[in-house]
Amino acid sequence: MARQEKKKDVVIVGLGWTGSIIGMELAQEGLEIVALERGHDQDTVPNFQYPQMIDELKYGVRLGMMQKPRQSTLTIRRNLEESALPYRSLGSFLPGNGVGGAGTHWNGLNWRPMLAEYKLRSHVEQNWGAGIIPEDMQLMDYPVTYEELEPHFARFERVAGISGNAGNINGQIIEGGNPFEAPRSSDYPMPAMPSTYDGAKFAEAAKSLGLHPFARPGGIASTSYVNEYGMQMGPCNHCGFCERYGCYQYSKSSPQTAILDALRKKPNFSYRTGAEVLRVEMAEDGKTATGVTYYDEAAQEEVFQPADLVILAAYQLHNVHLMLLSGIGQPYDPRTGQGVTGKNYAYQMNGGYTLFYENEVFNPFIGTGANGFSIDDYGIGQIDFGTEGFIGGSYISSGQSNGQPIRSMPLPAGTPAWGQGWKDGIKKWYGHSMSIGSHGSHMAYRNNYLDLDPTYKDRHGRPLMRMTFNWHDNEVRMTQFMREKIRPIAEALKPDSMQDAFKKQGQMYDVRPYQTTHNTGGAIMSETPDQGAVNKFSQAWDKHNVFVMGAGNFVQNTQYNPTGLVGGLAYHTAQAIRTQYLSNPRPLV
Image (cartoon, rainbow, N blue to C red; front, side):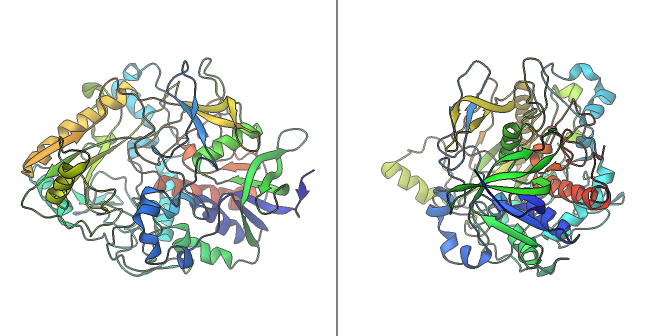
């Protein structure tokens, strides 16, 4: 029999961005809250301190901040006929491990989706008709509008400490910002970071071609900053250790720098590490949750934590797994199209050019995760889908993010992969290249989904989650379109040589190379219970005291990095719980 803890008002599963936000917001209501984190405790000091944190071999290559597959994994297949096999070596995506989650090791890029993305199905139907939507594409509108989310985007940007230049404040287009962004109520809390040489070159070339470059917005402090919780950030020194690392200088936005120290001071908030939640427990009638059962790693036993309100704030994949294990929402079946939990899993579609210069030097030891310039001239809201033959879009960027010599050594095609020829290639080209990247959307499809694996189990005897996913022609056409749009910019930069890497028709999903940690869907928002797992407030349709946070709520993936939308939705949910749910617990829709 599981040990039972004293009942709490709220139990939060996971202590990353969304768990920290909800924890702080509900702690301000005076509720008794406990957060359960499967990983270890970690903070800027001592865990991210210099020089230990900038160990490229430990963190950049051996993935010291990531969950190991032996701790948590899933099985993967590319279609319904394949046998799924366990993801045994991290490659394609990298879930974080420990307090702060993936919010500790991200690059910091922070976006609001383009205006068309909130009602994308309606946008397509109104402009081109439903006939251009591929038969197996499950294109959807969000049940929440940009206007409803805008104040929550603004608040997340203030809390996280985002640097950038606004391009549209209340409809007024501002030089130097993104002219295609949705109208903002206010500017970013800090001005944009200065760019490295490659980003400046790209911006100049793009502008000469009539495009609209702007400094990339990101959670990298351009100056000193204090947020509403009293948390402080210091200006970035461009050390180039953002992605895969914790920030030792309090300069990168993360739960640690933005929320956690203030949250820990709340007497009604506590958290436990080494606490892996196994399932959400239900009342006898199955209509509400009574708490969660977790495995206490230190005591080596199961523990039941009763609570009136359950918040699933783990990583997207783990939230969906818990929902499937706990009977939250009917599991999705691609053959019938029935069910909601696991539906509309989506990813990201990227590509890029590498440009080589024999006589120009790009200092590889200067960079940030959100460095450089972007253009949105080929974003979702700017493309004639009917003419181009695809649905989607991409932002295009250039900027040095790091010069780590093991991970960042682009070499011209044909350079030997080892031996003296490889050494000669590194000597000649290290610091003599720049890149231009496309970061594109990914639509949801009938056969891209998540469910429970019928064969493989984890150490607790629970079925692993199974991912069925492959690339589709629509996204490949989109990325090839971007290839042709980037080419004139690359040519205008006059490199000595250049090469590109974009997905081609017929290419299959490969888990080995890193792509993005931008897994979305599986717990999608919807207007009605038959379309998705949660409502517009991230509340489970069939369990009103369960709220599910994060990128699992995305109905399809946007062209942008997901954290901005994740943060905006978290504050939207927090407001709904505070102003509507606590006084009268019930379904909010």
